[in-house]
Length: 229
Length: 265
Image (cartoon, rainbow over all chains, first blue to last red):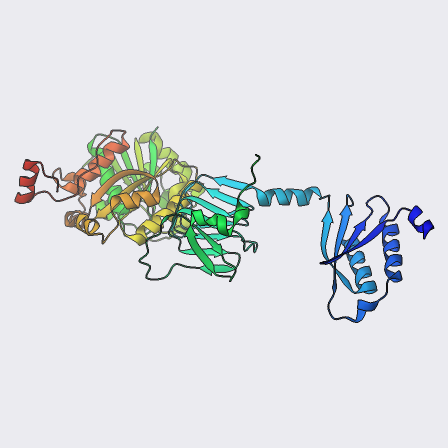
């Protein structure tokens, strides 16, 4: 036992309520990491292996960037030895491409125009439109859509499937609203005149709701940026 | 060097040809040199509205295909020496010419005329592309109907992609009593949706149709309200500031009385 603690451990296993956490050393080679993992896992009793449900595992990889095939071999090792699946990988590093994608997805694209019939505006991230969407026009964003004008056409927020996206408009007269894969169109005989400043979101039952913009803070507090002080 | 203005609408039957004929006539009235170009190949009408049908010898396609010189195809108007028409071919269709062939032709006309008015066919296909290709400016015609406004919106979107100044709007065939009752869109609603500069408004009138059928543009009649509207549009094209016409019919005795007493109708 004394000998083992002297040698720096490449793999640390911690048990938590939600499952196991593997803290992987980010300085050693991947091969030594994998062999040590296999060694450690083989020491463990294989009591859970016949169980039908999987053990959920979280990997903490520090500053090591894991390639796709490396993740696959880790996955295979874990499922072979202890019947576990990787639930989440917590890494301190990103590739430039991933970082760029992340930045784009968080970007608010400002656009100054009238989206006219037949025109389709598609953006990655949020869309802030300073102008109208006329009937027959379409705006699409992977994130949220904010229309500072009259929305009369189609708005599709969360076009990549983000159900938490919202659509806000100064004047909400849409021909159709879509969030993720939920589609809503106004009722045929709508006598309710829309209020100014409304927002649409998908509630926890999976239905789309339209409410005044002041209510948004209750449903989607995440839309807000966190300001200093 | 003149200016080439395309008159377009997307939807058919809203009054592109009538507007081209009348604005052209009104411009000629004020002494401008004007050439009207009909690009509606296969469905030409501008010559009929102008009453010049039986003077046509060559047409637009003949010029493009080199069967005649440009000057040979131009038909001079009955009424004005300074107004000419380049007619479209009636036997071919829109694919008979290409945008690349229209450009030099319009440029050549711009050398000799103050205004070249291009009458665009309905639709957004080849014919539209041909008509737009040589133009410096565009006039979009709409009526106060939802379908017509929708198509005008589409056309404005397509014009944005062209190398052309932001288009101006003419609202044609307005029926004041219907707008007043809320049965048709009113001028303000149309302008709000389309969000472009308003060049003029023309009321729907039987006289306009009658005049077109006779081959005598209504703009020749100095007293007619539609004629005044077209003349005002021509003046605005020339850079003058002219207030919009009041389309309400104020001719009744009761209205005159109200006007006299200063009561607003």
